[in-house]
Length: 288
Image (cartoon, rainbow, N blue to C red; front, side, top):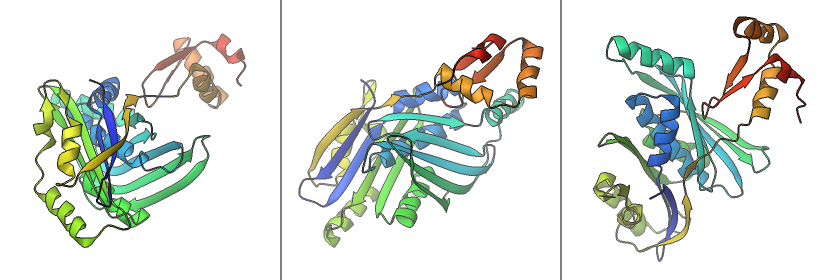
């Protein structure tokens, strides 16, 4: 079973619900980064958060969620589209230092929340919106819920669940938004249901997560209607041509030093960790 994202509304109640299972995708992305369990769990949360928030884009494009910290990592970010495409990254040098420290002693994974940054782009890559707010909670779900209320004035609840089950990473999440015409009785019933909601791990069936059943449970007794369903996939638009173009922006002395030391230059995509190797002859390639 592939990862899924479901977009739903209440059939007779004024709320919007998005549910995502990005477990396999998060496993693929975090494995490419060589992330230890603590970082993989955090990246799984941010991946789901970006997918859930991108589902609310009013037009084709992309959204980036970046969480800034002090401590073991300075930033964890993910880019997502409304169609379920996603990529994520952490600082490679910080991650390497964390992994190396864990080889000697148990790693000290410490994060102090600083800021949330959200960027929205159009389908053509034009900047549509950028906002920054203080990160008011150390947990990703409550922090993004606070962002939606503070920056976008959307009364909502965003829940994120990431961890390991039988040695495999799981990454699940939901976003419930109150629509403008919701009544107080419905709102209270939804809030009460969230307080008593069972863990999503109870909706695991064999090797996959039954997010359709989870979505029904999140509806709190209100019947829901699934409007759209998309596969979630890891996707990075990097290419050899783009990597070479980026390499040519480096000052010439830095480029020459790389060739003198290794006889070649390697550019590693910060998102998918794909390695592009260039020789001095490649500098003559035409960049479009």
